[in-house]
Length: 248
Figure 1 (tube, rainbow, N blue to C red):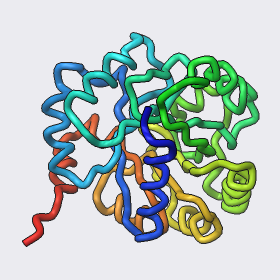
Figure 2: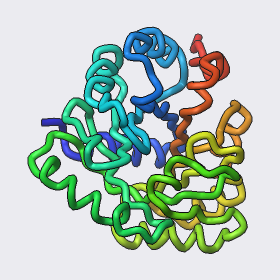
Figure 3: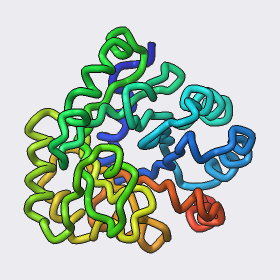
Figure 4: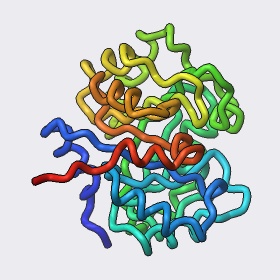
């Protein structure tokens, strides 16, 4: 069994040191298992610190196979980013135990979580309670369609802040502001800053970030961990923009 809260403690320590973290999000439905070795060769030359695996659906039931293959090629922490309880696999290191706080559909607020308990009661996975907040990225996302919930408008800055703080007050250990896969617009830096200034737990931001400039904007606004998925799916040359610096 892995040490309890090891990964979460690492995230907390990074926040204290103002060390910014970056996760690559891998959708099992969108990656060829044979491509994983080459993909992770590029990952290890970059500043990526975490691997998230999951998606709104897992139509081909590839989750466990993909996670097991990934674990063969990296020592980076691998966390499940589940679209449903069916995506849980012991092959990973941990799981973001998501509650969709921005919607009012009980299926993704608590019911999927209850369905996951039988798999997680005696698990070796590190479980990290995470408040998931869907923000309007100017496109209907898979999360929106599957969860049958509406994202919060980026004009509703106070609503976003209060939703994030409600998650913190409810005991969540991470807050995740998500514009959604394929979003046309990232979460605005002023929103990230507004939330980060009040939040006392680590803040994750993802969706619509497709350049190093946008990545830096998210970090400078206060994101502790940024998640990028579509940008790597569409253009693996993006890895070249975030290569590790050679220290002399």
